[in-house]
Length: 357
Figure 1 (cartoon, rainbow, N blue to C red):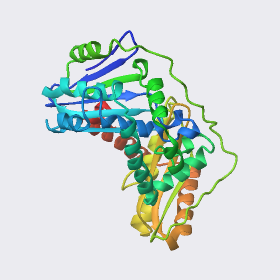
Figure 2: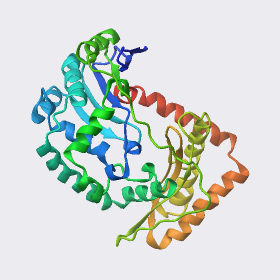
Figure 3: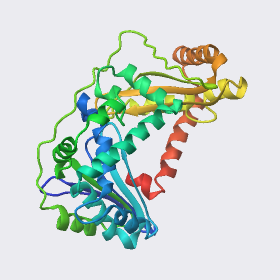
């Protein structure tokens, strides 16, 4: 059963109790991500996500990992366009300790200047790594085309130039601006008692004061002409993405777009997979995906093809899009696409981590 509680200082607690589980997944979601960043601070949300693991006012770096992993649990974090999440999955007996660690990461990191400079080098290497992986770098290129001169069009990890210039003071101010109770959701699923978790949050975090949260710059959500961007790299395979602006997270038509995405390239029985891979052997990987954000979204088709087969592959993809526009989908395709999405959702919700997220 799902329950939600909001404390006086604005922090929200949401739980879904599944007592048949022997573990619990716990997450702290902070309402800040790449699209909240000024251009000169590109990558600061991701930078801060890294730095908090260097130690808190209560726990040293090594102790943070030992208290979770040493009890059989998993600990991790991620940064997206609109949120930063710190999460763990542990045996239910270790909930209190895990809560204490995660809450300290979010509200009580040391943010030591030496740690920040040291972690900066790690992130610069991470940026280089993604630049060396064309299947990831091509996604940066398409975002830049969809949202030019906008935070959504920049890399979540930042650039070599922007990250190199981020200072100790920038990190501290950014944390103070966004890591506040009314911008945090605590989410848990598994063998969990809602009132007990609310009690833990109240005991440790009720004293933190809420504040004003800076908003993000809105995306225009329009495109007047076709755009193209290319990055040359001497490798055997061409990685391509065809993208267009999609739907925001509040648009009910996003469900229709999800079914369409499934029919086009969502699984092994999808049109593009059958046409490009099964029938013609042009691609090993071919898929479609949707992204839904607060005020915008995207629809993407990704493929990895032989360098000499690029034009043929793009022509086939465009032909398939045109065919689905003019002739629509069959009743059988529609049913299979819908059932696939429902089935995947149901299977995912069996896992406490997916449920918590």
